[in-house]
Length: 281
Image 1: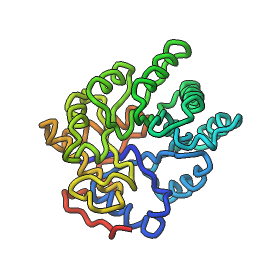
Image 2: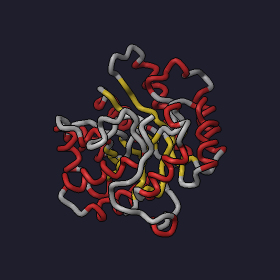
Image 3: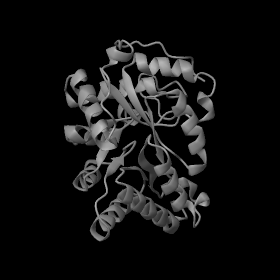
Image 4: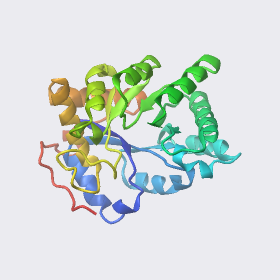
């Protein structure tokens, strides 16, 4: 039952007290690798310190579109330097566009373009955050691919409709689903999840946010709960859970160029739910 949680934020304070217990829980749930997304370059050292403790943790580096107050003339160089400073870096991001209550669209577009440039130059995928900005995000990527060259990545925590989903698939991007897909009224997300080709499908928690059903009442999401996302997707797509776990893991390995992952039994026996998880923090 191999799983890869392709988007976590373990450096947040809510995880500070029980990271060891959380690690045991996700290993018990069959999670073989995790990609730690970066909100802004200043947190990269803390992310590295966590990865020093957890060998299955891989890193990204970038600047989130909601943190444009931190974008300076030197930020792109800083991101590039950090990306090449640690072999565990497997992506640039999270970057992208967020036009929900935004008044800084110009600088968001500039920062997104610059981070696409870094990803293209280093041969890394991008982790794309997109909120209320699907058309603009697609247009930036299309323009970049046309004028500069190839770039790929993942639309993370995807909440778009099928038409938007198809556009990013046409651009060569993977689509990652979080706990949102399990929410009762997330109809367009469910429709998108049913149409994504098997070889472009990924799963994530985006923890500590967006706990999936049946753990939605817990304020703090955690990597072990990616099991619920995968199980729900398997039911939604009417496929065997083990097959979906295998294919999403294979997709993560392909996109992020992860090393061959061990079978769960080689590290810690993976067992079906319920798994033992720490109390909500």
